[in-house]
Each structure stands twice: as C-alpha cells, then as structure tokens.
Image 1 (cartoon, rainbow, N blue to C red):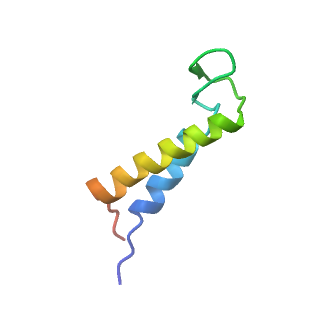
Image 2: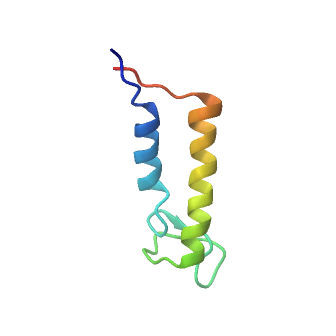
Length: 69
C-alpha cells in the first residue's frame, strides 16, 4: 500500500511561504507590495488565499506532483 504525500507536502510548504506578511504582503498598507513587514489585513488574506488556491491547483492537478512512500 502506497501513500501519496505530494499534495500534503505542497500544501504545507505553500502555507508557510504564502502567509501574508511573512515573505511579502499583497496589497500592503501604503504600497502595492511590501516584503517582510509581518502585518496583515483582511484584503491581504483574501488575495493570498486566491493565490494559494491557484498555485496549489496548478502544482497538484495540472503538473501532478507526487511523493510516493
């Protein structure tokens, strides 16, 4: 019996990298984009959620990343 860890690994890495304010925030408080400011807003969370969904769908469904154990 084999388990596919690809979708879970992609989700965890993307969740860490796309957390608003960690690496970047889009849109920011005073600019369009800010890097490493550790602040967030409601609209920023929404934008990052849409980015997360789009990139995750491309990586898991279209490209088909698989890690079999």
